[in-house]
Length: 206
Image (cartoon, rainbow, N blue to C red; front, side, top):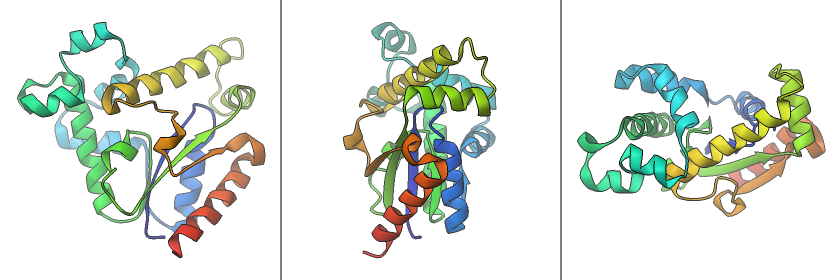
């Protein structure tokens, strides 16, 4: 495997587990929360700041006014004038670029597909599933309270979509942003991993 693989995923779809299994199959590094830990260490920001950034991001005009700018205007006025959240995003983006430069790997979330968009060895995947599958899996795996599981799953998706929209300027769930989008509930987690391996192997042989 000579590709950098990014994975965006709906909450509860198993995207993180799928990414980890692909990394194990190809014996390449897997990055998820490791990105936050490394970015926090290199930037001096607390890890909690990175974790909170995604929760706070929204596509509302009020938020953008309060934060002062987004990633597009940030490029024009320089790092010194950036909001805290934009500085956090850029610190994280720097780490994403560094791990990609180190060689083939799997990166989950973090807008990595957008950050690394100029790379020719990049493969962007999107994992989604039915709401019922994601609710059931979140209760079973993440121990979400059954009474609030549906609410939390949908809220998590909205949070990820807003974060992506704010920093990238595009819809997070737009299939045109990805090389392949796949439903994990149809063949199950292991079946999805097998399907993705077949796809990646085909690309790797071209």
